[in-house]
Length: 84
Image (cartoon, rainbow, N blue to C red; front, side, top):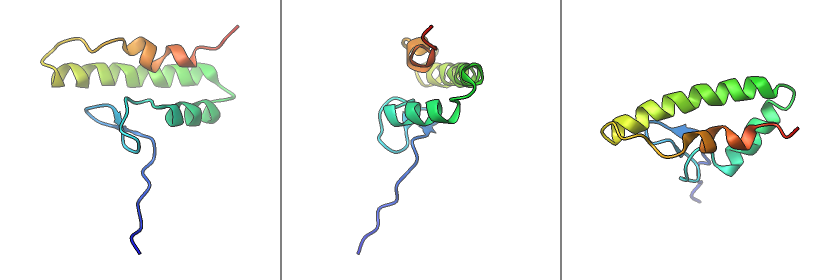
């Protein structure tokens, strides 16, 4: 019997693809996990995501020879902004 190792939905640096599903991180599963983990402190979630976004921007720019990498604000922050 072959067992498959299930990887967590975490970023694979420096490409910032999900280790588990391979799509751009944060993937849907990662977003749900983060929202649950930070459900009591949305401000801390936003600070955490902003820090990761800055790290991703630097690493992705290095991979692409200094070219800015897409809309990282939408990818990392807009989905987590609380609705008032």
